[in-house]
Image 1 (tube, rainbow, N blue to C red):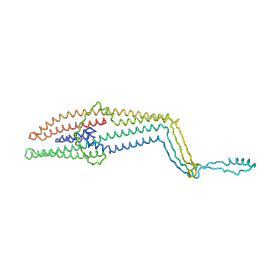
Image 2: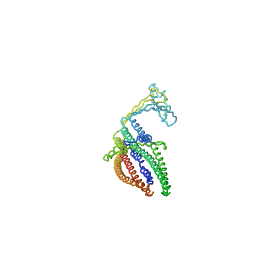
Image 3: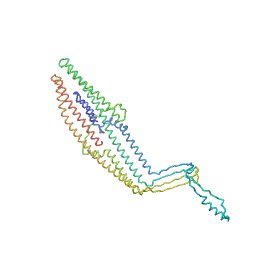
Image 4: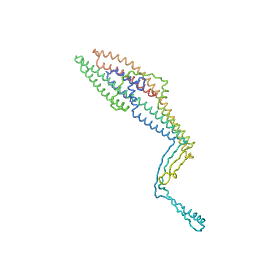
Length: 473
């Protein structure tokens, strides 16, 4: 987007021979701040910090980190004992019953004992029991208790805590990646807005030159030294300047709106332009250390490394599940019985120690271990691929910067020659020794040379910004 917008701005200058190149100084120095340089503008840096704090993409990353922190807290809580209070009361009617023939079982025994005691054969005991029908659903029954459960040993808990910690590191690295990208987007948008302002100044300066030309040509026509067409030509050039100024102001509005969008402000909010960027200088880069520096700085690699660590931990977790059982301790203390009362008869206590181990699970644990290994291998390949891509980006950005700097040196020679030719041509035109079209052609040549140098200077700064972005600084 940056190259397209720069070409759009510069394309206007090719059509007008009177553009002053001096006002490009502020623009060119601003391009040097496309990234956190030592001479970074305090105003631009303040905007960057405002964007880092308010941008919606960064806020989304903050939410993801907060969510992962809660997942980590939950994983830590799984290793602590759990206490539960439970109270319930049951009222029931009907339902299935179980017949218990207690009378048929015990009444003959009581009768026999009674006959022996009374020495009366055939006598019935005064104690006669009725057969019972006990309902399955207990009526007027309650249970009020406090239960606890404590995992003495569970390999999943420890490994899960490690995985959640590593995933948290991954989320933090992803946020750093977003912030790094946002820093450059804000700087780019700020420079685009400033570039549109500087371009407008150039056209306003061109109008001043054209107005002076028109005045000079009117004096020539008045003194019958030239015909009316020279005035019409100057007027036409003035109308083109007005058109370009209108278009540039539209670009300013769009650039300002996008810049404010990045820092999450009102789209029409004013943007403060910092003239101290004129003092920013291009730093020197050592190609020998750039690739290694990028491998150390790029947060994308940190995110991939954290994901790989989580996958490797998952392998160990699934492997441990195949070999180790789970131990737990539990118990309850409370009251249980008919009628909602609390007395010694209803008081009870229960303790439990357990061990669980899957003797056969159809190969699920083995498959999960293999799945985790494959995921880890995929992340290793992705990480290595990312390292190679980053090294390629840095190398290409370095070569592009060197090429742009060489082009800049070449355009400087052409500019000197074009300006000298334009100076001589302008003096001849004022002396009446040249036609207006010849003077315009000479001015077009010097404007072309100046634009080529500006384009080369801008390309150097753009390539320098791309290099800094690839290195991760």
